[in-house]
Length: 194
Image (cartoon, rainbow, N blue to C red; front, side, top):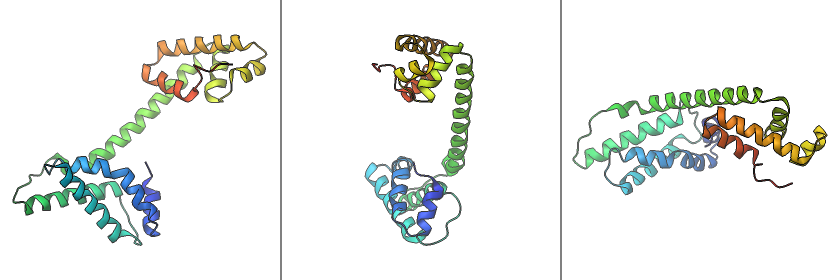
């Protein structure tokens, strides 16, 4: 995902990178959104492509204020309504009219959840016994190899592995599986051979 501020800056500078970023960020989700109004994926994708091209043609080189995401969702909804009207169908207003507001609330909720999980992880790391915590922090946060940690602490590589394994076991008990999985991905160490 590319940030809206970067996209807006590129739009204002007529930088075509903005079009690629807009496509990367929004094409798929806008196509799914359009499917709420039209009956075929081809119609939905055509509609979204037209909206994205029209957006770029009309907004490049101009000062854009507001949310790109909200603007595009609104434009897709209006285009879908026009498409349905031209096809002789009626569209009824639903909760989807406020999708942009709901999606912004969802983003805020996700950010809060990430912060909550980070605080939980930090608290559980602080609760680890001294040497286990030192080893865990050195491997996961400082990205050191087992051998480097052993040299730094003046212990054997096997002792480092033992402390690291104990730390992981304690975290496994106190944290849910998803958080531990993310930690092990960051560390990239469980299968390391030294």
